Length: 428
Image (cartoon, rainbow, N blue to C red; front, side):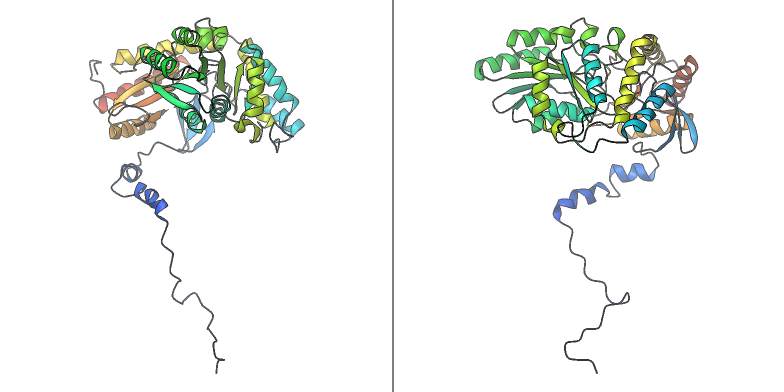
């Protein structure tokens, strides 16, 4: 006989305890996986183009699902990702400094390598000073947050990268967005600010090279507007450093206006085959950012292998000037190649060449068929691009061979005809 109040221990065969209902906050998560939604349909059809695992990456060639493909969707513009000299530099840094810094630059996370890279980049970009950030995304977010405060105004191109948008949101400043590349609209907003907010500090911020269209910002007009209205001008050269301008010095140097831009940011995850970011400008402004940007102060610093990688890439970029020249030769060849086949590549001016496909589902099918042909590119769909303008974002490296480029064009021609994006006579 069991004592009064005794309760038999539960077993696996007992009735399972009731599960608490999920918070309503998660309703959007469950709706995302609804069988009738585009995500579920694309996954079911094996057309989902994102988060595909790369098993080996040798630059222009990669292994995906055990099969070699030509990589035409990487931002490895200078082709240094697998360069033996770069890998050796990273390995040597690990041997000397270890795998990380375990702290922020503000405290215990500053290495002599960080200071060396800041000096080298300031000199390379022709500016007084530089400060590093742990990612390119954090660079733009952190610079904007540090400089633009309550009572200030930010003027941002509507096609700016998400990290710039994030920076405007965390800033206490008001943001006025101008239509993409519409500097007449920007002028009207600046005139409005002069009338209504004459005491406000003003920051104009734009991509130097726009990451989807591959077009270069109109820096001459931007610098003129900044000077006329007493605004600071910031260029995000994530896709421009190592790519645009003589020697790859960026979008301002493309126009010979390096000294007319107040701040230039960049990332190491593209031309420099690493991870991290930087901003260059006048010394006092850079030191102010160094001491006031929360993204810099409260984040662990760049690991030594990443810093050493950038330093070696910078050495190679300065010594092997043919890489930038070859990159532009390739870009011109591919733009003309796509256009001659009948594809719409917008107004690309750089190694970023969008190939417009059309509706979203056709885009995913086009991407999968290209992969089957042995070419990897990036499928880009709304809201990253306008409705009906889903596209293949292609990008090129200085190390692509002529044979690889022709292979890419041939694959696009076959898939373009299959899906009716181009016709047999080369018309859209």
